[in-house]
Image 1: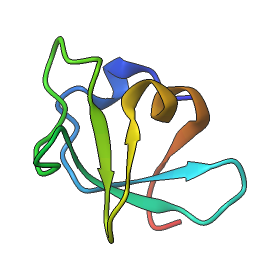
Image 2 (image 1 turned 90 degrees about the vertical axis):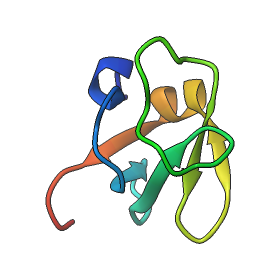
Image 3 (image 1 turned 180 degrees about the vertical axis):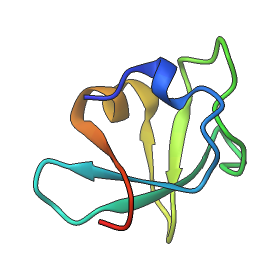
Length: 70
């Protein structure tokens, strides 16, 4: 589970993982999907490399940040 404080200002791209599946890359947040998450924004979407998006509360609830080259 990710906390919003872990994502605010975190440089993009970065990897996240859903349970034991392969990591996927978050390239940004919001409609354009290219910017890091800003303070005070909690109702937006995370945009994934290669297409696709996920509502931020679902990302926080169901994913973990992948550290290093996993």
